Image (cartoon, rainbow, N blue to C red; front, side, top):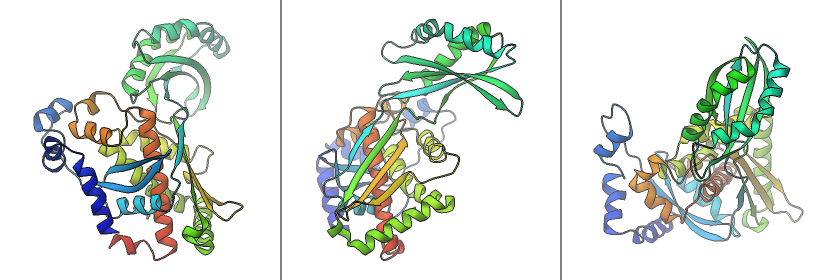
Length: 356
Ligand code: MEV
């Protein structure tokens, strides 16, 4: 397995120019001056190993996938999982709609306030859309919450953020609209902020493992392991951690906001009120193992950080990724592969067999 991984590594490194190779092996993509411009109080730059996962075919296209991780065996788990899926992963995303929330307190008449905001919906969207030429607010909704400090109104703005992560734009939209919302509701606006529970930016991935690749005993054991995770949040947390090993590895390699996706993943995992796995495994009628993953994936291929991170730009090019949807599809596929690789190892020789 290790020598085969080396072949893939050579293949990927051959695609790099001398300058890019230096970027990968020496500088890590940002110098001190860039780092200083990017963030506050910078005192240095941290680095972490960047490996390449092999065996991936995603929506029909073979792909080598750079993964940044400090943990031994994550790249191996991804490669093992992907290697069990000869037809590759089929994946799509639901879109790039992110949501911003404006919290309204001390509303004198909830019904009247709700009606007034909805009556102004079109005008509010027009206002919001003065902030960007290409990324547009497309909807506005209202909900009421009973909270520990009383009832409050929440105005939610849905925006197509395209290939950006969207936080800056959405926070700005919420702050722009808040005074108008306060005026027409008669209430006081407090938080004006993006939600990371990106339920309109979900990636769905499906994969089939032919029965002959694993044998029916191993398939049954993987399904039993999956049933454990669906019945027990303690196991679900670890199963999801294994998925996030791969997802976050891709996001780190592309300089994305990992905390945003992490928060979205775990809140999505518990959206029914019970914490659940992000993947599901079942047996098809012909005995094949079928797996799916669904999770919010608020990622970006454009935006300040990516633009100033030279290595992230090369990683995106190596993966042939231009759009946020393409990146979401790759990250989701790696998540499902890691889950399968870990399950396979755990139900056969044990996870230590690939960690040591
Ligand atoms: C370790 O980083 C990840 C695993 O624990 C995932 C799992 O248990 O499914 C091996």
